Image (cartoon, rainbow, N blue to C red):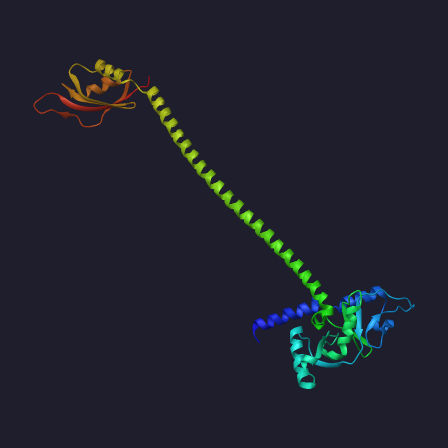
Length: 331
């Protein structure tokens, strides 16, 4: 047997056992209206074998709870020694009737009986239609409508499952309609719940996507603002450095005036370079260039005078070429 067949049988068994077992309800109803089974309450069967009223032990008439029993002739067969799903039990019952009885399936009703504890077996009743149809017509005329039908078997009433009654006679079609109404209502609730959940999920997803878009936009704006702030900070730092450098630097004119004042007449300059507080001078001395170091250090504006390249004597002349770096004292 295929896996899908096993799964379908399990579902049908669960549905039959948990949902479609009417005898549990009948037990509750019997407890509400007196102890014992309907057969033990002095059920009154007319000549047709149909119960149409129940008498309480005190002789008072019990409320009509929509039940009836059939006490006519019926054949009982055992389909299997174990519990079977409804559809499977019906298939086995039809095969058994075709094999063991002379009846045509079109002339009889096959009524699966509920399992009995503690040793449940699958059994069913076979009743000829011409025997029970008149009784079912009488049941159809009863008010309120009958919801349960039992078969009197050896002094006990065997209540047929509601699923059997749905297909037995139009008299019991209201059971199927009632069940279908409940299933439709349950399905409607499920659909509404699913639609509500889908709507909430869609709204949540849309809101989450919108939130992600807004967050990304704000992050982009924050990065742009951060970039602008960094540029502003760099500009401020550069301006501050320039201002500070300008405040600490010595004007070029003052450096030039001081060099002109301290250098002797026999020394002249060919190049001058100022880099912050460092001044580099290049030139010629008619006599000794070494004497210029002491002269420059003696100035109040210059300090740390030293040669940055060897003194070179000019061929054919008595002068020396020099390159001196010195520092300018801040104002």
